[in-house]
Image (cartoon, rainbow, N blue to C red; front, top):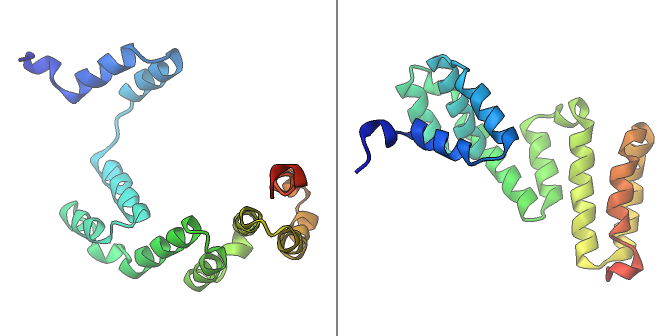
Length: 169
């Protein structure tokens, strides 16, 4: 058995860092110098639990670390998980509708999010092989956003290149 000083997670991380590339090693060394207060660490863990959709665990953790369990919005977590699942399964319209119900200002406050969701819907149409619907969708939903924000043209061009006849679409 290893002596106690060599079996700790810190020791294991230091061994792994010594074998890592220089950028990772440098990042690890800087991380070693950072002291996070327990309250900050608790907030990070709670945020991760919420963002991953672990509602019960988030509520339990909130109570255990002294944060009000009421701070964990169970309905909001469930709705965000449903939105993520809709995007992951290609149901982009469902995701857009659900996001607007959850926060009516989300897309006006973050138009690039709406653009990227519409772009994902375009990708789903391209995958289905329906070139005509893909072009119509891009014209109706993405072109107006690109006109309003010219920096998005590169993303749209990249996606539309997937629709070229030589790609089997």
